[in-house]
Image (tube, rainbow, N blue to C red):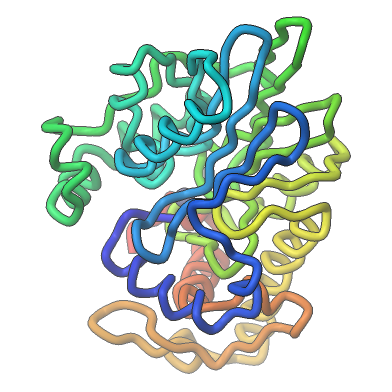
Length: 319
Ligand SMILES: [Zn+2]
């Protein structure tokens, strides 16, 4: 997801409408297994992503940097869980709600880690997005930086592995889904996957930097690892059904837009614009994927349309 006013407004509406709201527990810390905790971010009020805290022999690893106010909350919670220092913070991708606190973590002594494409994405989109976020958000503004701090350590060969004998974490990259830099943290012994926003549990799929046609391939790459516990970038924790649902949603989205095009429909017949932004759509998806359909849906249809029309990933198009 993206750190915008639109996002905060949109998520309020979709959260209130979705049944999964019943299981959403913002700011709660849930033990997934010994030494692994899932902290559900307060997306509705703060725009925060979820975080995972993983205990190694001598240190902690945190999945996602979050926004600065989110990072502070995670640091406070981590202290309650373990006296070990936080050594690594993994940016699953470049979006502000996952990476804009990088400077907070490095100042606290941690090393920020990501796939190399996260840096490439920041180089592409920054400093513009950082400056927009700094206008909207006090916590970003208060860092007094001109742009997003890049992750300090990157990898290009997947998986990059941390193994201290007590626990092994594999950092995978399966290609471009939500962003070019999508990274996953997998605990092979515990079969736990941390997905960032390439897999979300709820109507949180932002497709503006994405590659809708390739998205299912990325999720299938994750499924091949055989995880039994799925810790998404937004929405509650779940099991393999979250992967299956995300995959089906992207397939149904592409299928429905292709069918509309094949029937001779034009874009303005399926997407209504308001203030130059997609506002409504006549496209309907099956009930089986309704957990993923929300306020972003008109934009997702719009993005899918252009991707098919141009034969290029949405994230490489200027629309
Ligand atoms: Zn995102």
